[in-house]
Amino acid sequence: MTGDEFERFKIFVDEKFRSHEQLISSRFDVIDKLVNDHHVSLYGNGSDGLKLKVDRIETAHKTLNKAWVFITAGVITVATWLGVNQ
Image 1 (cartoon, rainbow, N blue to C red):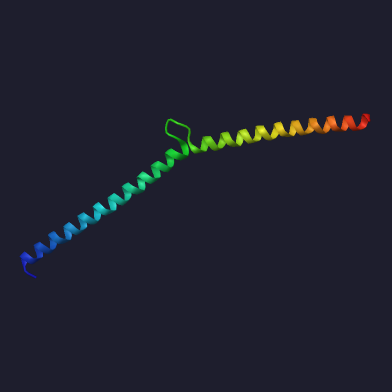
Image 2: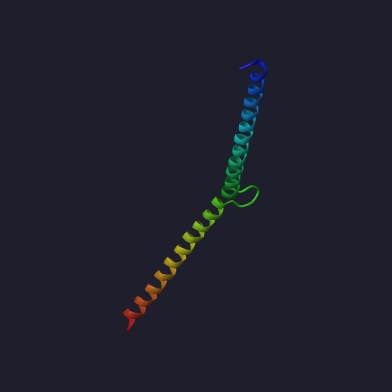
């Protein structure tokens, strides 16, 4: 290999490494954007996130469940009272 060929090869390898670094950088940018979007949808960014919405649904379910238990207990009590008095 002559000096001129060596310089051209060196430039070629430098260009390949530079393009490879740009490719890896763009992949990391895409991954970073996906992770950021996931974080925003899960925890919210100035708005309610999915985690808060799920917590509200669970709280509403627990409250509704307690209300149904109370109503069922009342109906059973009334039915028992009516059955005993007949």
